[in-house]
Figure 1: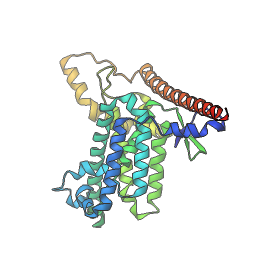
Figure 2: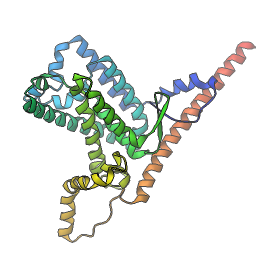
Figure 3: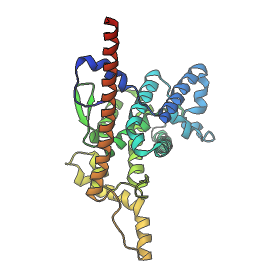
Figure 4: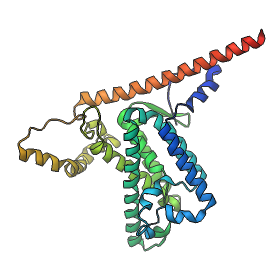
Amino acid sequence: MMMSSPSSSSSSSPARGSSFFTGFTRLCKGLSVILVGGYVLMQIFPSAVNYVALIPARTIPFAWNLITAGYLEQSLPGVVISTVGLLLFGKLLEPLWGSKEFLKFIIVVNFLTAVCVFLTAIALYYITRQESYLYTPLSGFHGVLSGYLVGTKQIIPDQEFSVVFLLKIKAKWMPTIVALVSVAISFFTVESVSFVPTILFGIYMSWIYLRYFQKKPETGLKGDPSDEFSFSSFFPELLQPILDPIASLFHRAFCGRSETYSETRGDTLTPLPGSDPIEASRRRERGARALEQRLVAEKLAVTGTIEVTSREKDAENV
């Protein structure tokens, strides 16, 4: 998956490819080391998976599994996808959120996703009486990766991404498409329990965190109650009128108590940042501007590389 940008000449493609894999943040590099190191550790000590991965039957007393499972990949494709996804999404989101908030997002989403997966596995066991739901090791960073898609939808919803170099999809539909594809795959494989709940809850927990709890440093207030980031915005417009009443229940659950408290004090309620279309437009402009600046920086790096290469060739010819 790549962000669409103006095409360049074929002579600059090698340099552009090298710039695509540069500029990663220190935090993302450190987290990548943890993901790769965890995978290597599992290959050397396979029995360690019983203490690090989420095994619902052993989560009590091994409660730390709810934290460690999200940073453990058990397969080579999994660690490659998670590492590359972390580095690429980190280049986009960390400069906008800040390193502290970016790390907080990972920790919170990872933990909440693991709790939901644990409860789902227990519920499925009681419904089906299949012990595989209790003893299958569950782990992976794909819950956070799904959450990054939600963050991208919030910041640059109209930015187009090239999928498999053929199909261009707007960022605002990426979480929905990933969720639908994951559910569709679950009908054709028995191993879907190891990844589908994590992806779905990763998307949902990320939305809840960004919608109601993420603190905006420029205002000091929390959340993003804009219509463009509502729960129904993840679905086609045909279904949105049906889903809006359901979504209002979550708004009352998360915001109703604070609003009631303000009313009892006699405070005048003012719209939160994000509920105003102007504020939502500003947020998208900031995201688009940051993305444009990064693309310009990469283009300048490509141009500089080409110039250095041409000078070296001229010197050799002399």
